[in-house]
Length: 122
Image (cartoon, rainbow, N blue to C red):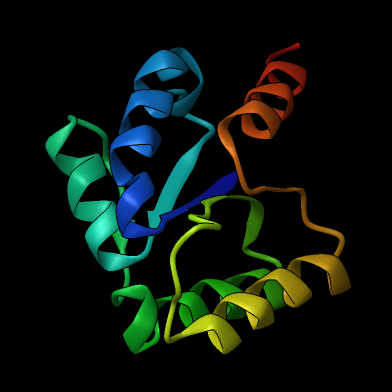
């Protein structure tokens, strides 16, 4: 199963902490990780294998959305920072919309992500 990891700048450390907490899930052989550029770099530095795409603001969100639309990506963890302005907000909304259109589970915070991962582990 392909899992997308995306995090706004203020949430990247939280994403790394989260995947470390659920390392047993994210390192399974049947799980492949994809990510936007900078988030993927942080995930790689934490020791995880991840396919990195462009940074979100320059097309990475759209690349992940394309993978959802073509049936490749089955789960999205997108830790959003609701207290900051994001100039690429239309791209973010497009990605969220694509998840809804294709019925893809989407977590935008660690609490929801933990519930999804725990349910998938069972």
